[in-house]
Structure formats: structure tokens, C-alpha cells
Amino acid sequence: MDNIVEQIIEILSKVIEPNTGKDLIHLRMIRDIHVEGKNIHLKVYLPANNYDKKDILFQDIQDSLTKNFADHEIHAHFVNQTAYSEAPNALLPQIKNFVAVASGKGGVGKSTVAVNLAIALSRLGYKTGILDADLYGPSLPTMFGIKKDKPQVQLIDGKHQLIPILVQGLPVLSLGNIIEADQAVVLRGPRLAAIIKQFFQDAQWPELDYLIIDLPPGTGDVQLTLVQTVPLTGVVMVTTPQEVAIIDAIKAANMFSMEQIKVPILGVIENMSWFQPLDQPDKKYFIFGQNGGQRLAHITHSSLIGQVPLIEKMRQRSDEGLAFELDEHDIYPALFESMAIALHKKVELRNLTLAPTKKVEQA
Image (cartoon, rainbow, N blue to C red; front, side, top):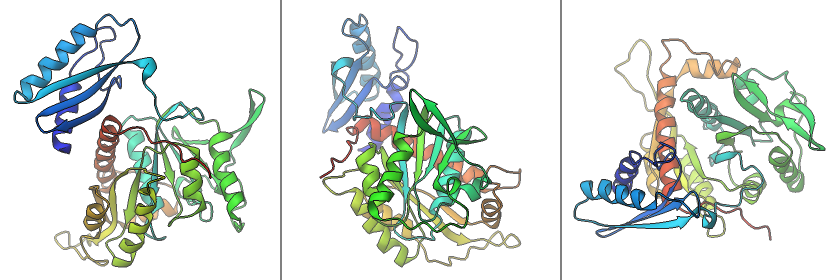
């Protein structure tokens, strides 16, 4: 079914809206694609009530889809843009997608994955920011080499706003840049929740295609506050192949799948998948086991976005604050670029086939 929907998206990405010269997918005019037997249903959101190219658009959609799905009935339902209700995102309407990076256990490399995904998305041309929501163990200042930097505070429209720190064009916000480096974070639930809300309500985030949110491991106040504050587009689960990591990752994923939360799992990234010695490139040592990420993807009804082997250079660069520094011999940037491309496709598919996530109402 997903394969058919992906084909439909590919076809409609070549159908041009006459007034703008841009394709329907780029303009986000197509929504709610679903296939029932030999019937293809989709909604076309018109940019204005008096839109004058409706007939042309209808024919172009029919012709394009019929050419590829001759044995299917095409049902294109037109909706006025004023009737189109995105998930309520009055808080940060300039951010298109909120993607959380989560894990069940600590120590699986979740922050490393979050940072490198954000960098890869940025290098692909998507406007990307990253928020360090791991309040007890903020790692982003170390990885980006900004441990001594402090976010500016500016008075904007009569309100004091935190300004994320720019690292090669990537806005970064972390509690680690606000407190002292060796200061213990001892916070109860209400204070944790207040800080998370402040990172959204009192921060001047720019226009973004993606805000990557590095979550703490497990389930708790931060995760719950997050889904109560912003409409998450989806979650990327990070795990190692090890059984104990998978067990807790399943629990973390199940929290997002709860009826009252219902945030889609976009996919799984398996970290520390194997070790490959530089002097023995034909050998792989599966130190933490095999196929754990694939199993987690199956259990969460998602897919395996990618596998990341143990790479000394990646660890070294993160420790030294050189996450952005690459050379021609590095293998992991291409690895994360392929995963970023896959993630973008997952997000695109999710946005075209599922209703926008709604914030969880507080009890």
C-alpha cells in the first residue's frame, strides 16, 4: 500500500499548478491520499475560494494518475483552503515539521544520531534546527563545540526571547549553554516541564523545515510535556541491536502510540550495528548482536531507516566539538545523508496520508 502511495506522490510531484508554476506536492495542495481496492482517493486544497484553474487541475490530476493506474478509479475531492485545518500550531507556525529523536535506554548514541541527522538535513538544503530536550544530560554543546557560548536574550515585541546559537547556519538551543558545564541538573517534573515549554514559547526560532528534538531516554515528564506543547510530526527511534536496548525502545515507542498521544513512528535507526576494522574492511564484528533495529521496526509498524556502524572518527569528532568538520575519507556523512533523504521521504509520506498530529490536551 505504501508503495502505491509513494508512486502517486511521485506522479503528482510532476503536476504543475498553473498560477505558480510549482508542483502540487511542493505547494502542499495534496492531502489525505489513501487507496481502497481499485479506488484512489485524495484531497486537493485550493489556494482560494475563487480559484479559477480548478477544471484544468482536475483534468491534469486525472490524466496523470490514469496513465499509470488505468485499472483504478480516481476520486479527487476539492477543498477550499479556508476549510483546511492544519494541526493547531499557533505557537510556532514558522516550523513545518517537529521530529523527535527518542530511545528507550541511554548510551545508545541517540544524541549522536540526532546531531548528524540535523547536519545531514541542513547539508541537503532543508532549513533545520535542533533542540536539546535531554535536560539531565545535554550533549549538544559538546558535540557542536559551543560549550562556552551563551544564547542571547532579546526583547522582541515586549517579551524576552532566547536566541538559538547558530552553528554554521544551524540554530541550536540547549540547557547546557545556560547552566555551568559541571552543574548538576536536579529538577522535579513541573520545573522540567516549564523549561521545555520555555524552549518553545520563549525562544526566537527562525523559519524551519525541520526542528530535530533530542529527547532524554525512556518515557517521562519531558516526553509528555513535548506532546502537550507542540504537534509532533513524528518520532525516530534509536537503538542498538542489543536485546536490552530493544526491550526499552519498544516501551518508549508504545508511549507515542498510545490512543491519547498518537504520534507516528517515522522509522528506526540502528546504531553501533557492527565494528569494521580499518585494516580488515572485509570483516564485520557484530558486537551487540544483529537485526535488533529491523525487529524494532517490525514491532512498531515502521521501517529501518538505516544502520550506523561503530566509527571511531565520528565519536572523536563529537567529543572534540567538531561535528560539522568532515574530510573526503569520512564514510559516515554519506551514511547520514542517505538516512536524511529516507527520513524526508517518510515525513512527506506521513504528511500526505495522515492527519496532522494534535497536541495532547492537558488533564
